[in-house]
Length: 447
Image 1 (cartoon, rainbow, N blue to C red):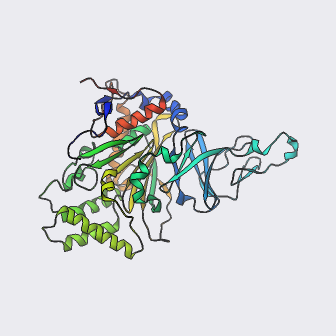
Image 2: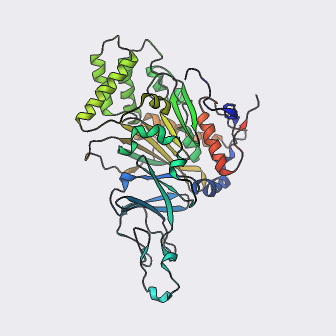
Image 3: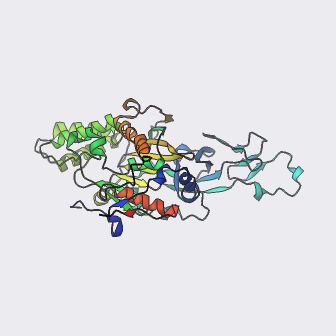
């Protein structure tokens, strides 16, 4: 890609305006339940969270609750989390069970969802049949180590829903990564405001000025992959906004090390200790005349060897597909992942009930570990949006989102006007949302 041109064709290339009502209306939030959340595949958990038969997690979205359980060695199942007697929820949080047990009247279900025990069942005579009281199933799909659920019994298979995601991202083998850390919080903004904050690179120069230390604000393309979208660098390398390689006076050996150290410092993600060590070795051994390409190849070669020695094998990456994959993906509707060869930063955002001004925001960092050395990680709640708690980069993003939500209610804002190049991924996100919600997509802006 050699010019700064929008990546989509037809009318999506034009500047558009977006209505603000979808971000601030409780009516819209309630409509999303039936039209969006009950029709889309969404990430519930990762397989590593339920490794043994009987391990379960409870997934909540709006007023719906789902039990996701490893029902046998090869099967993950999902059921509506509700007793078929009087409606009590059966589980909360996570745990291990041989049967699901209602704490109200003692009804029990096997892991396959079939009824196992009803006290005084004879009182119903022949009126109570097993098929009437089995736990209602929810569709389950698996990709990249993630467990997806879909409420719609007639939904399309996950494989077709993901469209081009596996083609570009399977090479990273995210399913072989494990949690390094996890955190969650509540943010005073609509879930879509939060998703869009991580679905474009236009904000990096202003919100994250420290990233310019190693070269200035790089051009980040954004594009559509069906209902999903991705971002990538138009030249250069490194994190969003770094523009590495564009300033020739910067020593690429120092850039490689500086970027790796900075990612560790500002977000404790998007790099690994192995890569930092490899960048240090490359800086100390390569000559000052080394090019950016030579430095990058050397760092990756050293890092691969360090990891091999400690029992971590790298996947085989197709260089061309790597560049086309980009650095950031929105898996519609509510998941963002930034995959790489040995690590992956991710975000999942859910509505906080029907309050359009609040969302549940989760961050996870995945990494490859030697077999048997994977850490046991809790999903830690953090209420303070400080650099000490979240790292500077995420703290800066949290600093924007509540003020965006407040601004969207202003009588002085007639519409939202995304940049047709930098924020084309947001335009595509809104078009996909419009398709599910049944209203018209973004309208062309009169020029």
